Image 1 (cartoon, protein in one colour):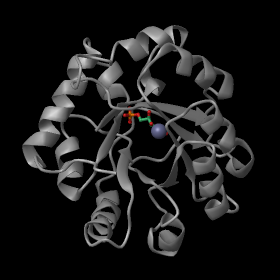
Image 2 (cartoon, rainbow, N blue to C red):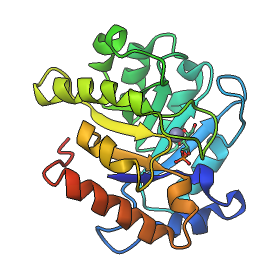
Image 3 (cartoon, rainbow, N blue to C red):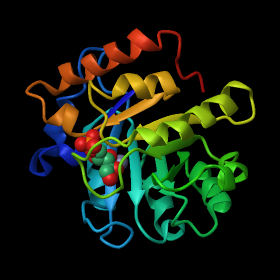
Image 4 (tube, protein in one colour):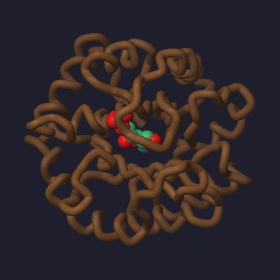
Length: 228
Ligand code: DX5
Ligand code: ZN
């Protein structure tokens, strides 16, 4: 799955930018990644709930909301209620991530848990059993256009092994610095869903950039597909 990140899109034309990655049936974006930043959990400030509500009305692409905010226990459910398909919170910010996952699911969304590059997986494995998706950050959250940190692929490999042996049931997502140079290593490590901001919206044809990323993934991991 490919999830273009609107962080690299033109914020004055979000509906058009969503349409630009829809592509041909079966070819376009699988999810649309929406980066919510509060200038507290991360230094940057982006968009919030009203924009997600508006986006939901303008696109059929499932919204993948990545909340880089403090107090997700208080705010995340609103994004599920606004129609987001997957709502991801940071384990470093959540107070009661198990209860939060239940609340997100009750509100009709998938529950996602994200780890920053320096956050190990092991202490959070029990928590992860309550989640549907795991978002491994491959840059420090806060800004697009940063360089991919290959060391995080160890966490992807660990999670992949746990999923493949039936010990964990999550979709594995990666976010940060994904482009045609880095996507293959991530695919080989076992990623299911690739978030890409500048590699998609920095291209002259965003839909074609999505298709190119998918071709690279298929070349190295032809049999993998999310079946959840
Ligand atoms: C960074 C965001 C990413 C960002 C990725 O904090 O979470 O989703 O859009 O951008 P690129 O693909 O340019 O690294
Ligand atoms: Zn993101």
